[in-house]
Amino acid sequence: FYDMAEEAHNAKKHGVGIDLIAFALESSAHSKQPILPEVQARMMRLQSHSFHLLGNLAAAKSSVEAANNLHPTCVGTYLLCKYLAQLQSLDAARALVPSLVNDPEFTGKMAISLTLVLVQCNALSDGISVLKACKDQSVEVKMKLLNLLCEAGNANDAFSILQTLGEGHMKGQTELTPQQLIALYSSAFSRAQTLTGTESARWLKKVAEIIPPSRSNDKAKTYRALASMHFNQEEYTDALAYAKRSQEIEPQSAYTTYLLIKIFISIDDVTGAQQAIQKLEHMHDPVLSKIAASCAQYAYDKGYALLAGDALAVMKDNIDTSMTQKERLQLLVNMLLCYEQEGVCDKLEGVVEAAAQVMEGMTSELDPEDVEWWRCKADQNKLFKVSVQLSKLLGDAMGQLYSLLRYSSLALENKVNVEGELKEAKELLGRCGGDANTKKVLLLLTIKSKVMVGEDVAECLRELGCSEGAVPEDFEVVASMVAPGSGCHSPAVHKQVMMMALQAATPRVAQDVPHFAMLLRRCLTDAEGRDQQWEIAKSAQPTILQHAPSYPPAELEWLSAEAWNNGIYYHRLDSADKARAWTGYAHTLAQHLPHCETRSE
Image (cartoon, rainbow, N blue to C red; front, side, top):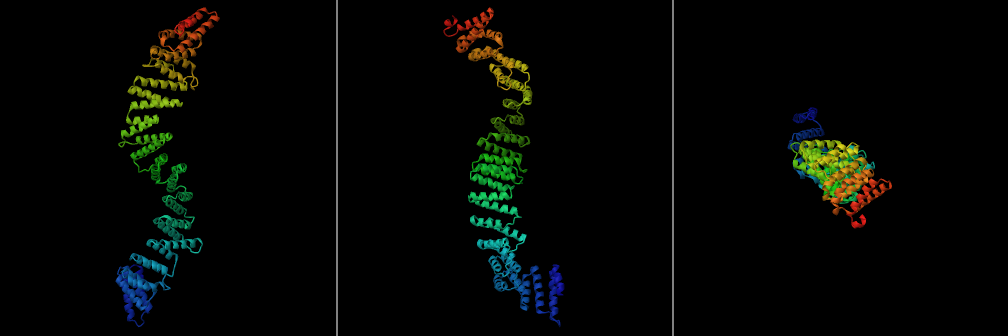
């Protein structure tokens, strides 16, 4: 019957087992060969255990007491102590502990089990006492004691156990399984997180010592915790040393890199912070965007707007998929403001372009005021190609046209081909119209573009000459495009344009006589031979004489001397008519010079 009871117990049919043991005990009482007392006691302990598993603690206690009265054992005392504690008879349980822990058969496993019951019954100190007094000081007992001491706040005793186990393992005196070793330093690491200052550092350093090389991630984590602890205490030298050791083990840790960035910023090492931020760019971590955001906020709060912008750039390139387009746009706004604050213009273009791309992907969320704000920023930083893109988003054809013209002007200065942009601008001008000045600007840019690629500009020049409101300065702009040293030097075009400038200046000479005089000198200087000079000078003479009182004396004297010299030249060649024409021209002009009588004579 006892064998059947054991089978029932193993099959978790505890009620059946209890009845079978009761029948076996009753049968033994009437048997000619009764069961030995120690066997009866063992049966009663099994019955007691079954009652306990069924939750009937009172019956369990009665059964084990009967077993102990019949044949006392260490196991019986251990079970009775557990049941008394669970029945909240702690004093009675405590009374059994001294004899129990001194029993040679009391194992570490029993001590741990009894301790768990005592802790559950809010008798933590009693549990610690049991483990301390246990003769079997196995690794399991010491580790359990370490945890309970930590829970009780007894850090010094707990650390002594950690030190004993750790050093014993490293010296080969205490054999710890890999699982035990992991449990040991994991428990110690958790304890260190609840401590502060030097006490926390002491625990973490010991943890770092006992972690095996095969657990490199755990060692890196411990060094990072040490670095963080020193950082929080503003001990930046130690913090930097431990953070670097952590990064050596785990170079792709975004958390460690973030900690390094904070340390570098705190010691004003901008170069170190920049290099660390650059490392973030090449990491692939699910939380990278959040770390970059935290880094940016820290840098900005410390007055390093440029570093904040760079950190946000990392975030931009590693966007969290949960971010909305609106949130992405706000991120770019923050980046732009950081770079503007630091005056870093070379990084603004990428930010504005990214914002334009984000806004192109937005539909109902797109706010025209946001687009206009970005367009203003683009214009302020001469990012006119982005302005074109943003004007399209706004449906602003004229804004698009003006941005195209601004971009083309800037690009041509850098010798960039803008044929496509000018063609688009021309189509926009035809579609939405534009004032004479806008048309003229487009024409001038077209001429410059054609000159740059070596195309004929005759038709464009004719159009410019006939355009409404053309002024001498317009032709001078073209002349500067083809002047010597411009990179697109064309003597023929230069002379043609200067003559057109002179013609445009003639009707308005009264507004700026010195300007007319300057243009005339340039045209005479560029003329091919004296015959061409004569044609230019002769056509200009009525205008000169009409405005002689306000004509610059220096220019009048230069022209008079030039005409006289040409007359002498032809006189030597016995070309009387040409000599007479040029000298007569000089004589006429000389009458309007200071001391004109002497000059004329």
